[in-house]
Image 1 (cartoon, one colour):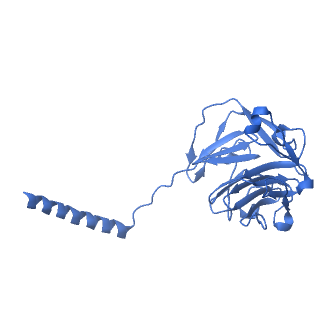
Image 2 (cartoon, helix red, strand yellow):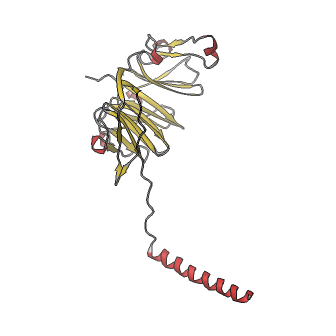
Image 3 (cartoon, helix red, strand yellow):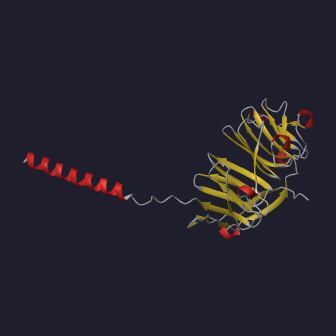
Length: 265
């Protein structure tokens, strides 16, 4: 039985403390009160399911008017779990696949397991550059060709669970929030993931969402909000040959400086 995808809201705040531990990340749990609700509620707190769009910010002056898009527009299902948009491109994560529109929502093309997704239940979507990341109940699907085909990544690649709730990406870094399996982080485009759990400081292993900004990583869990700072790489020792060359150059430089000083006297 598939678990409902939760959303989160937080009340109260404490100044976060960032920390690291040798060999990886350590998440600092904050005392946030987490309200868990269902993503089955309509997008943007409307009563209807499916995808609703409104023109902003001009529409705010006279109130919002939404246009609702459903399976009649090409969506795979009217229950929409998540959405991402860039320009006229819209990506809708639904119970029936990933709907992609290139005309502002007028029509959608639906992508499913037939296109390589691990499951047709898509809980979240993110787009970075030309890459599309689809969080599904059968793994994390990544497309580099506009969604025509996906490569699916699972526990075989290091994820803690194949039920992926949410995803965020920046460059070759990918962050996969999983159900009861913790937070998977890849630094090589998804080929392999390192998994982080309560053993690394997370408040719970159910991770509904994730975000990263700069060196900071934010993990929403069923036991609090985890924040970690990626450790700064420490430069390795200078190779022996390099050290000898540098020392020799330094001695020659000092001789030239002394010679120049003697000439000017």
